[in-house]
Length: 96
Image (cartoon, rainbow, N blue to C red; front, side, top):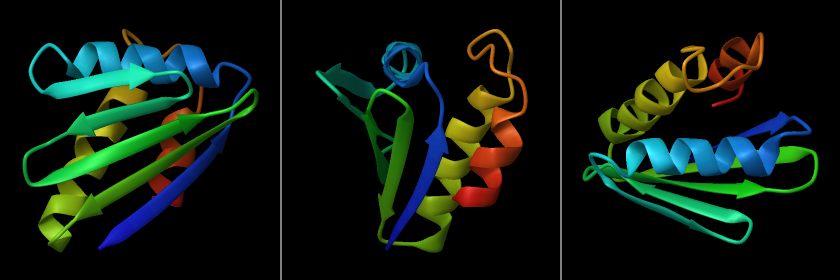
């Protein structure tokens, strides 16, 4: 199962790196160039950053795995400690 969310932001690369660095503390996560990867065990998320867009591709074998990715990534979008962009959580939540 795959779900994709797209967000327009002029801070795409910086935000992708911030998310990957944060998740790397407890999970396998890294970025290289314009791609970021986060492994949640039961699911994974690939993030592609361009100059004005972030594409999140969540992949899992189960609906629960997809929900895990959406909750984990979404919770960090709405936490201003990690992401300082107003309103981005509702956009990500609606698109995933």
